[in-house]
Amino acid sequence: MPAMAAVVGGGVWLGSEAVAGSSGLQCRQGAQVWTDCRMRQLSPGHHWFLEIGADRIEFRHDGSGRMRMRAGQRGSWVSVEPRWDKNQSLCWGTVCARGDVRLD
Image (tube, rainbow, N blue to C red; front, side, top):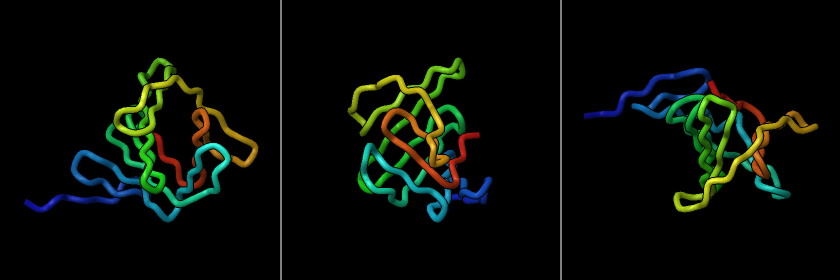
């Protein structure tokens, strides 16, 4: 059966997963240079991934203000505080995204 796709808020909805358009999102980890990245949302605002090259950063938000992040599927979960930096980028710990960041 072919996968169903629809445009959702600038991204694409593929089955149970929303994919933010790659043309408007850049990410970086720490002091690395900005690079195109993708955001995949399994549950918008609650569970999403950033794919930065071959790296995958997973995020979970429990609705109470607590956010956790982990690098890779076997990385340890760490608590992070979201913040806006001086360049209008949204950051969680050392991971930042700028452009078309869709979290809801």
